[in-house]
Image 1 (cartoon, helix red, strand yellow):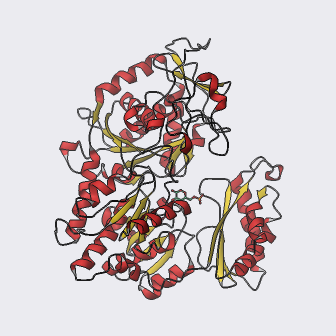
Image 2 (spheres, protein in one colour):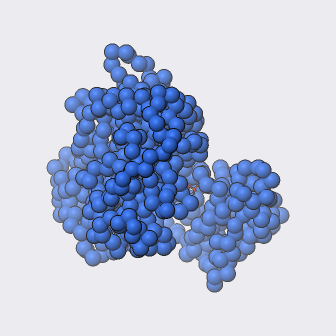
Image 3 (spheres, protein in one colour):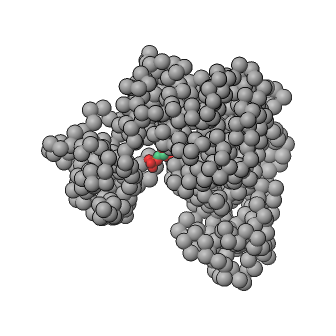
Length: 624
Ligand SMILES: O=P(O)(O)OC[C@H]1O[C@H](O)[C@H](O)[C@@H](O)[C@@H]1O
């Protein structure tokens, strides 16, 4: 249970039965500040839009925390009158809408209190119930041999709630009778990989894996991704797990919760799995370079991990391969993300790595998102390989190895990319839907019906290759880039990252490329009790009708989501967000004027929907 009393976070420590208060001040300007005294919390410096940040943590090992997160203040307990110990349902557990925690094929929620309007949804008991539900789901999927319990690996990114949630996940899995192997700080792809690795010394392969992450979302969020050796769980399985979690949560008793703590300590093991995973990456580069020990000797490559989990790449992958990594930045895990959002789609993040490359006169820059399933790069002149350019680069590499293969991408890729893949590289571009799971599943499907595909990749920087078990792995994408660098040099081509830049030569890029996100107000009377999805579909239908009656616009002949339209030398796509009550609008054109013409076509349709917040579009149309 968590209650906010005069802005101070009060959280019940279920196991000790006490409530604990913690507050701390955070933000760039206060890294060295100790915890704010209880009476002085109102005087905290403004942070994140002027809000005071107060956060609760318990049981977080200081090992994983940067200096300003370690100074928590413990306050005397307040006892709730209904908090008596019980062997029936636990009375202080909040009512939780588990189904709202589903975010496509992930689970996401708020794990840290203190942000106005964002109450904690991912509490320890909720987490414990979800982990127990996954374990029950897994036991049903796999044939359980009673003499050998199933094994589940658990890892996390750098978020400040990671340790608490890892402990709760451990209790949930153990309470279901499964063994738990904790990896600590890990990447999402490493967790999937642990279901495939054959190495008993590292207790692998595990039967299931749980990654605790909310990718690039703000510090107060967290979530879970689940894997078996068949890949990441899909939407239907996540829904099933959440339904199971409701029942488990509702039948929690104090006694049961105490027992799960005991079981957790009995069935828990810890393993340094990242060593196995990183040595596999190193081996892959060495093999591709003809078994040279240090194929990157002399290359200067800087890494920007954005204070996420990707710092390992410099020391554990690049250095053993001989690369110089000085100037690498934000490698230390810090769940407050004090430098920039760890997201290769973010402009500030790309600017930071580009600057680091120039300052260090490096050959290449590599940047990861928080949990390392996404990545991007910059060449020695600071030219970015992200979004369409990353797809173009990866397509060039993969099509050299597999001529004519189909490249599956998300829906917001540019027309120039299609021309590049099909005319310059001789491949086939299959522009599918947004969502990394969607593109991967589509590539797998194409192969199953006889259409060869070796790469599924999104503009977001998610990418998976057939040769790597369709594992969605930002680090492996970079391994492919490194292979190219190393093999070019082995065949006598000098010039560092120029070999990469040359590979995307000829890719036409639009002068203007924007994404405007139009929010649907779910409480607006115009929804007439319907869902935001139905409302969004109605907007799309009307837009489609408008387009059909306008001779200057042409609907894309093949399109898998939303309304994609060409006109004025550019294109737009309006679609429903995968997760949010939002209609993202992407526009690309060769001039702002043409982009505005496309935007006006959308505006004339969307204006008829009062629950749609079109201010982002209006603002775009007003700028000249
Ligand atoms: O539909 P949107 O709101 O733009 O979100 C789409 C994105 O959602 C998540 O971040 C997924 O990891 C991405 O694979 C996906 O592309």
